[in-house]
Amino acid sequence: MKKRLYILFLLISAFGFSQSMTSSVDSTEIKIGSQLNLILKAKVTLKDHVVFPERKFIGRLEVLESYPIDTIKDNDKLELIKKYGLTQFDSGVYKIPSIAVRINNKEYFSDSSSVRVNDVKVDTIVQPMFDIKPIVEVKKPASDWWKYVLFGLLVIGLGVLAYFIIKRIQKNKKEEAKGFASPIEKALVYSENLEKKSLWQNGKVKEYYSELTDIARVYIEESLSVPAMESTSNELYKALRAETGKRNIKISPSLLNQFNEVLKNADLVKFAKSQPIASEIEESKMIINEFLLSLDKATPRTQEEQDNLFQEEIRIKKAKKDKVIRAVLSIVVVIVFLFISLIVFARTIAYDYLKDNYIGHTSKELLEKEWVISEYGDPAIKIETPRVLKRTVDERVQQNLPPTVKSVGRFTYGSLIDNFSITLNTTTFKDSVALDKDIAIEANIKYLESVGAKNILVKVDDYEPKKGLSGKKAYGTFTVNNPIDKKEYKMAYEIVIFAQPNSAQEFFLIYKDGDKDAEKMMERVRNSIELKKSSL
Image 1 (cartoon, rainbow, N blue to C red):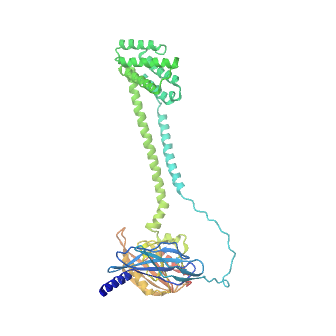
Image 2: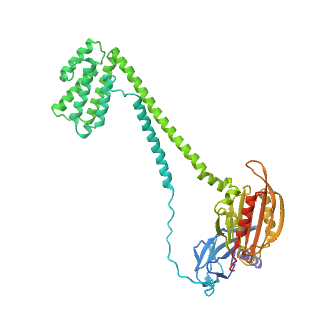
Image 3: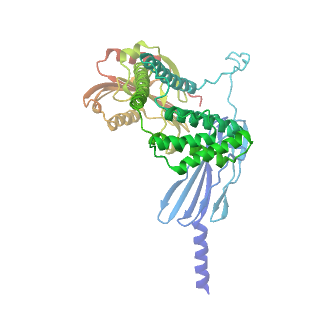
């Protein structure tokens, strides 16, 4: 019995120690707007399911950032570490309440704690005070989308204009053929125009049948010389039978009878106010067209008619060819316009963009252009440069900061193989950590080696600019292979490290060795450096 109780006690103890949670804060006193970190640690087994809460506020403290969960593995045990970045913008003492962490659908609560948020002291005696200036509304810059639309419309308009100009030129070079090459062509064109009018669809059935039968009568009169327009439907039918028999025109009797029926139906519509349905109207149209085409095909052509048809065929082919020429020439005009625009763009805006981002400007160009003065990092480093330094963010670095580091910043212009490049690294520490400048210089030299620098010569001196804090500098030369032209270049560099109790700034300047303009730029940049001391 004692043995069983002992085993049960061991199981309970093992279960009790298999899951536990602790909490801590990295600071119990901060300034308004500063960040403190709440750290939750859960010790569990590999099989446990753990859920940390996601909130916008913890108590009255705002959650600036909820960091990813870190995991430390020890055999079959896990230590899960969840960090929350908190802040408050009002002074006072604030309680961090217990946080519920769900482990295997059971809630475990962290310890509560408190934090003091202090006011930022403002010296109202030494510093002059001014009235609050009115708010100035800054207009948001308009998007450039309309420029692209306008350019597209310009290109389309240019193409259309070129098309019609070329068409006008082609028309002036030749006289358009007038009339029709044959009676059947005239009949088909009139029939097509009749359908475009949509007469019977709009209730004008009588007008439709009148024009339809007139088209057929005109064709018969012009092709067979039969007085079709003055004949009644019955007289026209008899005349057609007689003429086709006399001229040995082989036309289907059934098709001739169908044509006669259409003529009779037309008479009923015109004189007896008959109202055929839509399918009957469509059938009448098809019979007329089929009859005219069959009659034209069966009728022997005179030499004059054959000549006219041959000329008409040539005219149609020429018209198609002219249309293709117009389209091709219009496209050529558009392509030439785009090509010229591309050249102008490449020689102006695009070339400057490539220089700013890829090729790099010459030292003389940078020296002669207007420079900019900007502040970077916190505490700020003020510097004058030929181009604004761009912030570069490495998410892996940001997510894996050492425990003593609060934030890092990196601002750059150019690269290692450019004519001239500048890099600023700023680091803010959580506590009053003193940066070892010698170790920092060694780390930067190793960084140069990692990015391809060889034959590095290093000289180290103390550095004290005209403005700001004292620092340390390393300078010298190195060689680097340019992957574009496969040549090796000798570069000069200068690294300056500034350290404060809670921050550090690293200043990189690299240029081609022997470049006098770059040396002048280096001196101008160096003389402009101004550091703002940390307020902590």
